[in-house]
Length: 426
Image (cartoon, rainbow, N blue to C red; front, side, top):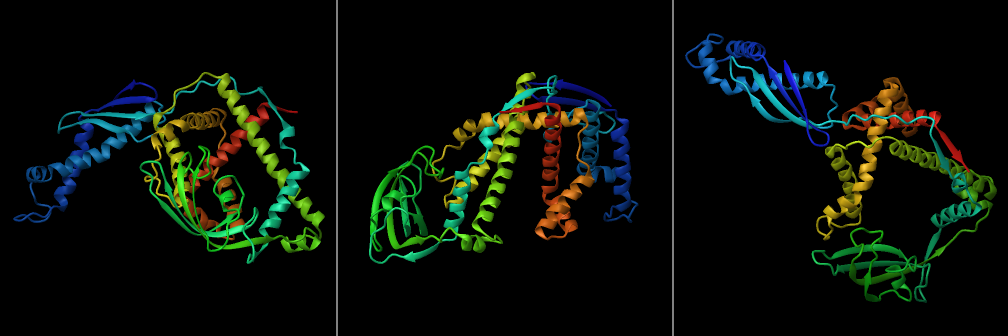
C-alpha cells in the first residue's frame, strides 16, 4: 500500500492511498463467489448462476461491498502508519477503482496539532489565598437565604405593594426590536423592588390593577432574549403577598435539619462554604497554571472542527436558557453569528486547554484505568441508590462513560501538574 501525506493549511491533512490491484481483486472475487452461491435468478438453480451474469447483474452492489470493506481498512492503516490523530471523520474526495486496477483513495480531515511542549514543570504561579477566605458575612448571607426559603406567605388585603412584597401577576411583553415576537407569561410570582427595572415598577400596585409601562433592558440583562431591548409591558396584578420570615433561633436550626442549635447550623454552613472555597481556589490556581504553561510554550494551530464544536456547545447552552424562559431562540431577533464570534476567544482557550491536557497525559503516561472508572461509577450509583452495573451500561450507551473518563483524566493531569509546579499563596 502506498501512502502520501500532504499537510494543508492549519490542521488539515490530505491522504492519498493506493492499494495494488491484487487486494481489491481478491475481495471482489470472494464477494462474487458469495453472491453466486446465494443468488436466485429465473432459469437457474440456486448457486448455478454463471459468474458473468452475477458480475453484470450485481455490479453496483459488488463495487459498493468492496469499497465498504477496503476504504475503512486502508484509512485506518494509513492513519496509523503516519501517526496521525484525527479529530473528525475523513471526507472522501476521490475513490477510483475498476477490476484489475489499483484502488486509489483521497481523503481529507483535520488532526490534532503536533504540540512541542518544553516548559510545564518547575513553574511558579501566585495565588491570592485571601480571596477565598470565608467571611462571617458570607455565613450570615447563607443563613438568611435558608431563612427566606423557609418563609410563609400571607395575602395582603388592605394596602398597596411595597418593596419586599410578592406580586402574583400575568404579563404580556412586546419587544420594540424588529423581528422580535411578543410573549406572554401567566402565574408569575415576582418579588417587588428586588432589582431596578421590571420588579420596581410593581411598587404601589394593588390587586386587580392593570399596569402598562416600557423598560429598556441593559445589554447584560439576565434574560438574553431581552438583553439590550426596549419592551412594552402590560401587567395584570392578581394578588399580593407578604413574606413572613421565621425567627433566627435554635428552633429554626432544628427545623432546617438535624442541628441542635443555631450555632451548629452556622458551623455547618461555614464548613460547606470553606469546602466550596477550597475547590474554587484549587480550580482557579489550576487555570492560572494552565495559562502560564500556554504562555511559556510555543503557540499551536487549533483544529477548526474542535473550535466550532466548542462554540456550538456554548451556543446550545444559551439556546436552552432562552427556551427555558419561554422564548423560541430563532424568533427573538438574536444575532447568533455575532454571539459565536464574541465567544471565540473563550472557545479557543477551552480547545487549547483540552489539547494541552491530552498532550501531557500522553507524554507523561498519565491514564485512567477501567478499574478506576468502575469505582467512580460505583460511588455515583451508591449516592443515587442505583445499581452500579445498570448505571455503567446506561453510561456506556449514552456517552456519559466517555465524559466521565475524560473528566477523570483531567483530574489526574491536574494532580500531576500541581505536584510538579509551585502555587504560592499570599
